[in-house]
Amino acid sequence: MQLPFETTPVVPAIPITFATKATWSTIAKDLPEPARQFALANDFTGKPGKCLTLPAPDGQIAHVVFGLEDESAKSRDLFRPGALPGLLPPGVYRFANAPHDPRLATLAFALGSYRFGRYRKAEKPEVRLVPPDGVDIADIARTAEAAALARDLINTPSNDMGPEQLADTAKALAERFGASFKCIIGDDLVKQNFPLIHAVGMASARTPRLIDLSWGDPAHPKVTLVGKGVCFDTGGLDLKPSSGMLIMKKDMGGAANVLALAQMVMDAKLKVRLRVLIPAVENAVAGNAFRPLDIFKSRKGPTVEIGNTDAEGRLVLADALALADEEKPELLVDLGTLTGAARVALGPDLPPFYTHDEMLAESVAAHAKRENDPLWRMPLWPPYDSWLDSKVADINNAPSGTFAGSITCALFLQRFVTDAKSWLHVDIYGWTPSAKPARPEGGECQAARAIYKLLSERYA
Ligand code: BES
Ligand code: MN
Ligand code: ZN
Image (tube, rainbow, N blue to C red):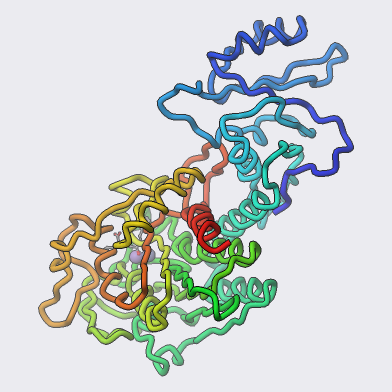
């Protein structure tokens, strides 16, 4: 992505003044009289999200005023300035006063400049910003680039983003940062004991694979990231209805966000031994597809009965988590677009996270808030664990009831993590259903920014 930042201070930049309903009258007083009159005539009052360009006597744009929530408002959208790239005419701008959070506002400006340009001529960002003083623009650029990577991967339709292309992306990332890369493909998944990944992916002509990337000093603490890479989820033989299938190109959103997170970690050279594991499969329909009631022995050992072929994400993650767990990492994180139930509980913008580690939970919640990358803790509720019982195998992948679907999925995954010092699971959506400031409709970077900051704090 081409970032919208103007770091060579050649052009005089047009000032953007942030106003709220409370501050507007004071701000208006200091404007040149014609500009003040113009704002008055346009009924500008500092309403959140309202943008007005004020003319100079020669008709050029002299000034911009943009409305934000009052300091005392019950909730403030700290990403609101992310609407500016979509509202302003081409030009170079600067912040004339401080928005509520200058760092997040600058990031929002970049996130709001994102366009998915793969399939038609990309409009290059013509609304540019001179970064405000005092922000770490390198870190903001790193974050915005990673978010664009996640969005691009998710937005790319499945015909161009199958297991192989997802692996190619991971390989390119490994090459860029000097990481090691390997991939276990097709029947080798069976030979090397990844039965569940193979079972889910085998019906597709596009061979399933396990992507495995490692980076950093082996002496550093081990942090392993696992991402659900279902490149398209038809539901399998438990076929989804067309309405449910329509956004399932995004079912590799966990993988996309894990790659975005890995990119940030490697670019910032955090002191970790990083491992990224992505089971990349297509959950397709064919004569050799896995079936409801099939039973497979998992990598970790327990036999898994297939209650529903559409609960495929937890299956591929189970084998990948088992592999990750074998090394007893200090921190094991998995991200995946796992359940519709998470959306029923919390909606698309607030993914639930699960962990037994109280300190980690507090830290995740704090960083999520600080980064405006919202996450909400839900419980690994032990009494529901028995809902995963199978009559014939050690565990069933889909409880018969529909209650607490995101929790029971987390409990399923928990069975495959026993030795990691600390485990964090996030049931993301990875998609913005309708555009908001800094969040264009489509693929979304979720949880990666918050976790990056958590890791930066721990392992700088
Ligand atoms: N990829 C879906 C989850 C999903 C659905 C995410 C809709 C976002 C929007 C996942 O593989 C799935 O199909 N889960 C099932 C699980 C069920 C069969 C136990 C679900 O949520 O319905
Ligand atoms: Mn599914
Ligand atoms: Zn899925």
